[in-house]
Length: 151
Image (cartoon, rainbow, N blue to C red; front, top):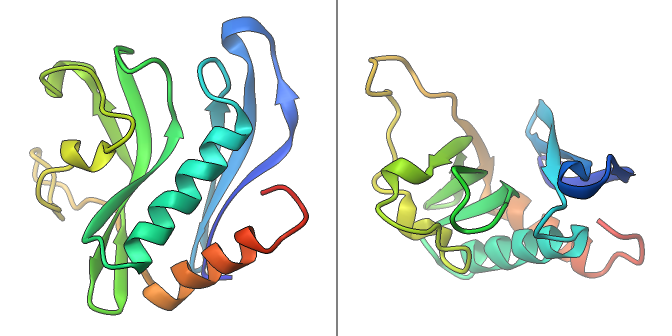
């Protein structure tokens, strides 16, 4: 599996500190992260990931896989933007700061907050970026849509 997003185990914590662990795989790279369950349930994340992946495969030039979603007016959100370039998909991790958005975070269309893909930060540092194939993303969609095991 060269591209995968999944939730791991059971929810932990309580109240506004309720979360579940998530994992992204991009080729040989993988990262685990806490997924807050305050405003979104596990199924909301999985549905958003499948929808974004499906739109990318269908020809959308860029999508965002949300991994830290709170209320649209929260101070920040996190996700993994993915840009389609031919048969390749370039993926980065992104922190979306409310103070830089100019309004509430658009949960339905987080791509509106992306701007152009950059490889160098404002500080002059190289931005980490991973490359997977469009075929890898399509395989993710097929695996998750036809799996009887929750993502």
